[in-house]
Image (cartoon, rainbow, N blue to C red; front, side, top):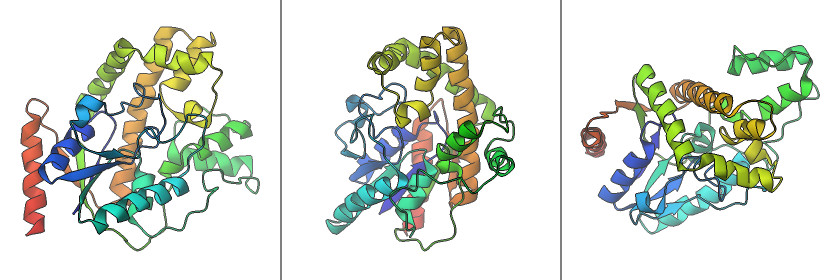
Length: 289
């Protein structure tokens, strides 16, 4: 059995995935594009050893922050793990918010090694600007800033639509959701908690070591704190920008999952998460019969 747990940032995916892995004696495969990197822990809300509670996790801490890692790489690595687990009749729980990675894993897409570095030379600035607006209609990138337009498109491949393809692995896809205003408040609170946990120090380590890799330049939290370290904005502005971009990212995640995958959504009971777990378990077992 394969179960996928998806949803926006800060909604409880980690907690749900571990509960399901325990119940079904499963191993967990992460489909988070940033949690693959070592030492990017607080800013990516990476699952801790304590939270894992003995459950085997895959596709976490497998690459150095200076290494590039594409959807092609993820598909190749994760499918090897999937096939090995399936061969020994092990249940699998996939968890994460990078929708493109999940779809690339489950469906028959033929990616190439350089798919994360697209050539936009054949497009005009006007065309690039329209492509960006399809992802973020309120973009502040100027139409004449070609470098930023191309960079934005390369760093937002998870928002691209994939052409129909055959499903290779059948998974029950569970989506967790909360009312939008509650989710946004939760995201803001989580950013404050990350700062208390040492997010600034974590980002400072990369900055002091002059690390400006694609992972750092892409991940929310690190790039905003780099702006603060560079003296371009205040610390307060950096924190507010992290919150804003995290909320925007959550909105994009909803849009992507609703349009790209057959998700069964569940409202999270914040006061008693066990109620949500039981609701999901009942659905899974009813579907299995």
